[in-house]
Length: 260
Image 1 (cartoon, rainbow, N blue to C red):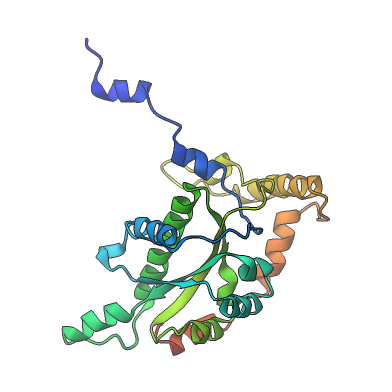
Image 2 (cartoon, rainbow, N blue to C red):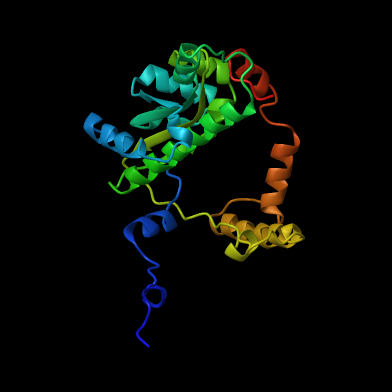
């Protein structure tokens, strides 16, 4: 019997590509050279990223390209003094943007007042997909960066600094530049502890955390950093147990993005 097409594909199943290698080698970069990023390079990265999937073709995102040093310095202050925010060649502010949706809805005789969780969630997912695509597009050019979630620490101050109108908020930022370092790659949780087949296999969280605590502690100690034996669960437990950014929902509702 001749070999079927599906059998052929299974036998020759690809497992490697330039994109896969880029993702497997990904690491956060906090130090950059003084070489600037050309505007046409940033534009090429973003134009590619805008082909990311978007729910119902909503395209509910906007990106602010920040180059002015005074603005980067202020963003550094608003993100708990992260010096790489001020030092990066370009800072990209990735924003969930409901303003164009609101225009379309109002045009058809409806209202965006008291919009529900779905719209805010869709906009945030949309911009996250664009952000990761931009990150990988930049990586393909030898440009690297760092995601900055701390823009949500002071969401209203960031919005005022960047001139964001109502119904727009900065979900995360991205430092982008030519890398001046190659730090060790931080380990991730084991594939087997994250991937499930057909149904979620409950009861494995404890083992996954214990295994990763040890792995991450060894990583930090190999770099000369002081940590606890339960490195990941200790840090995450304290950080999230204290309800970070507890006023975020209230601030976003004031900006016309409702999460209720």
